[in-house]
Amino acid sequence: MQTITSGGAATAKRYANAKRRAAGSSLQDVANLAKVSRATAARVFSDEHLVAEKTRGAVRRAARMLNYSPNLLARGLAGGRTNMIGVLWALSGTPEAIGTTHLLAEQLEQCHFMPYITDAPAHGAATKNMLREFARRNFDGIVMQIGDARASADDLEFIELLSCFRAVVLVSAQPLELGFDEVVCDRLSAYREAARHFANIGRRRPAIITAHHSNIQKVEAFFDEARQCGMEVLPDAVIDIAQGHDLDATHARGVLETRFSDTSFPFDAVMCSNDELAMLTGAWLTGQGLRIPDDVALAGFDDMRISRVLNPPLATADRRRKEVADTIATLLTSRLDQPDLPVRSHDLPMRFLWRESAGRDPMCGASGPVIDG
Image: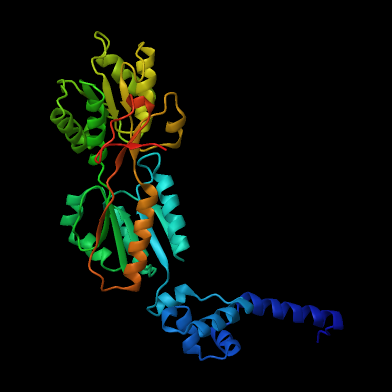
């Protein structure tokens, strides 16, 4: 039989204590220290508004002393809240998509949620599989960016999957009306404001550079506003860079060279569907001996950080990312706290953000562009 020395006994005791600390204190330990019932202690960590402030304080102090944290996964298995939120966002979309999700994660964490952010297409089988996984893990809520509103509305399986969650916030460019809370970030308003600005400063021949196949509504909104403002829309005013999300600089320059190899550039105002494309266009125009904004007023979209330090600073669109993140967090927390609230829709239209590349200072008006501070 093995003999344990006094030194060995001390080591064994320390090891046993370490194991107990690693295992953590139980909710009953917290209740005993706070001198309340186990049910009251549990309520502090689930529905604290039902517990008196003095009692809440005693329980939380006891929890800190014992280094106790509630097991949210176990709570979820028992039908309680887990505070886990799934975020499905098209991270491979605009260059600033990561910035948007970073702000959203900050807001959710401040509200004591644990966000799980994943890259996902706007709609499809992969998205449905991810929703099933979130539901299987008892996530409390879902934040989802929706690209194809029509496909989403017609997909009953998709809507049923969303219905598995206590709270859902959908983010889209147009109203969805699927029976869930939503944030509508209309992009067309920024295109219309840009067209009005160009007209207000005396530009007469606008063009738009975009991947036309995926931006038809933006093109139509921009030129509709331009015509209403008395501008001349030439037959070749759409310059199509059909490359999808991955912009290739050589390809973009090649398109411009091919289109205008035998003629001078006929446009005096150009709207690009993103800031990267606007930077490439600006460099090409400068190479042709044209001055920005004197000869050609130029604007992009997305408001990349580098855009404000270019020479001249690049006009763009304000996506109102902070407001979007704040609104999503508010909708989630209020829905979880009050499940019977009516379905809500918040409009946060994007705005044209003026900078020097777009020409002289705009004539300010109630519906005019935002001036970058």
